[in-house]
Structure formats: C-alpha cells, structure tokens
Amino acid sequence: MLAGAPPAALAQQAPSPDRETGVTVPNFWDPRGVGDRPTATPETIRFLASDDFPPFSFRDGTGRLTGFNIDLARALCEELDSACSLRIKSFDALIPALVREEGDAIIAGLATTEANAKTLLFSDPYLRLPARFAVLTGTGIEVTPEGLADKRISVTEGTVHQAFLERYFADAQIKAYASETEARAALGTEEADAHFGDGLSLSFWLNGETSAECCSFAGGPWLEPGYFDHSLTVAFRIEDTFRQEAINHALYRLQQNGTYSELYLRYFPVSFY
Image (cartoon, rainbow, N blue to C red; front, top):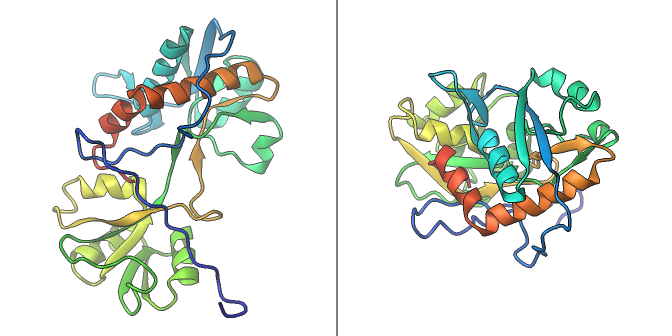
C-alpha cells in the first residue's frame, strides 16, 4: 500500500437470506452468546418513544400507534414477562423525560454519541443502518473500487456517502446531485451506472412507484466505521444496569426464537441488508 493511501473500505458480507422468504435478515448477536435468563427481570418497563419516525414509530390511518420500534418494545416486554407501557414525547423531550423518571427506557433511534454516553446507558444494537449501492437491474456491475473504476456513481451532495466515495472510490466518476431524488433519478435515466446512499431509504424507493422497478441492490451492506456505524439501541438512565441487562437478554432471545426476523420482514419487505 502506498504511503498516505486510504485503507481498503470494508464491505460486510451480506447475511444469508431467510430460507422461507428469501429476504435477508441481519443478525447482530453472537450465536455463541450466553442465553441464560437473568435471575430477576423488571416487573414493568415504561418505554418512551416518538410517533413521527416511520417505519419505526408512527400513527397509521386509524391513528393507531405502530412501527418496528413499537412492536419490538412489546415483544421485549412479552419475552421478559414484564408489564409494558409506552409514552409518546417529541424527540427532543425524550432524554429530559427519562431523566425525570417519566419512563424507564427510550426506544427511538437515539444516537450513542460521546455526550449521550456520559449520561445514559445503551442496550446492544438491534439495528444498524448501512449504506448500499443500487444499479439498473440486470447490469451485473461489480460494486467494488476496482469494478466501479471509471464508472459514473450518483450520490447526494454534501453527505457522508459522498465523502466515503471520494475516499475509497476515487477512480470512479462521482456525480453529486443537490437532492437524493435527483441522485436516484440519474440512475433510472442512465446518467449514472450506480447510485450510492442510505440503505434504509433506498429499500423503500426500490419497493415504491417512483423507482418504476428500474433498479436493485448490488453487493453487500457497507458499515465502514466513522461513516456508516450508526446503530439503533434502547437507552436507559446511567444507573439502570438492571433493565439494560434484561433488555440485552431479551434482544438475544428474540433473535434466537425468530421474533426479530418476523418483525424485520413485516416492516422491511425489501431488506437493506
């Protein structure tokens, strides 16, 4: 490797598709992990969440609260035989409400920043948000730095995705657009050979009408540290190791017994892994 050259980017090998559905479900838990149930579990868990974060927490057409986070919270309580409640707050009010003991845990995609880590405890990650490449279906492009050399890659200007491409895909023709809509459209109109962006939002675009079924994911998820390492976790008060340990055990159990896969497939029919 040349002095000063960036290290090779790390693309995670995509997990195997679910045998029954053919959809890839991520697994963030070590299969060798200890699954012993804690000697004591919380009698109650009062979750705090927002209701404007689809598909994780939102109101459906009837006003009913639903979403991946909401159903996961209920499944965690059921696994632990704990009474469960859910209180809705604006996102900015979640941490103050937890500190005032208006709830026991936040399930709202709260970032595990250095500042938050000083005042909060976090569960093990239950979802990571990778970056993905999309290409025109059937093109067979290899989405590696070598495979995309001299190819045109569309990306949204000013994003971490653009910074990542400029560092690791410097031999490609990086075409930055003012909006994600324009960057994706460039792929559909063949102004670009590949598009690079947030895997979660791309999965909904691929499954929606605006893509006109033009495209599909290529390669595996990209989880490069410092770029795409944001994780969804449950947050607790700094002293509440009791609930943290119980939730970590329950998350492991939900993955082992298939409940996690069921929830993932319910809300993410086009997997972003």
